[in-house]
Length: 163
Image 1 (spheres, helix red, strand yellow):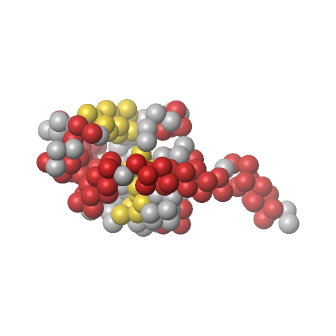
Image 2 (cartoon, helix red, strand yellow; image 1 turned 90 degrees about the vertical axis):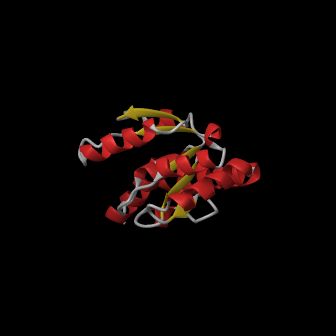
Image 3 (tube, helix red, strand yellow; image 1 turned 60 degrees about the vertical axis):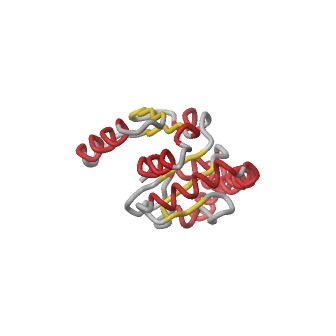
C-alpha cells in the first residue's frame, strides 16, 4: 500500500518530496511478499531504504517525521503505533484492530482503510502541503502516547493486581 501510494505521488510530481524507510522483515511471514516489495520499490524513483530488523526502533523513529503502519490484517495492539506517537511522529495506520483504540483520526494521527493506496496518497499529499496540520497532529501524538508509557502502564497493572 505504501509503495503504491509513493507511485501515485510520483505521478503527481511529488515523488522527490518523500523519502521512505521500510523497517522489518518477513522472516515469520511470507518471504515471497518481501520479494514482491523489493521488486515494486526497484521500479520507483522515490528514495527508499530497507533496514531489515531494527533492534532499537526509537532511534530510527527519532530520525523521521511520519510513520505509516499499513498492516493488512488487524493488529491486536500495534506497539509500533504507540512508539511512533511517543516520538511525536505523525502516525497513519489501518483503521482496524488496536490502532483504532489509540488514534483519534485527524487529532493525534490518521486512520485509513487497509489497502487503500489512493486514500494514503491523498493524505500524504495533504500532509506534505499543510505544515500547521503536521505540527498540530505531532503535538497531540506525543501527549496521547504518554498514557502508554511504561511508568503509567506498570502502575495501572500493579493497581489491578493488588487493589
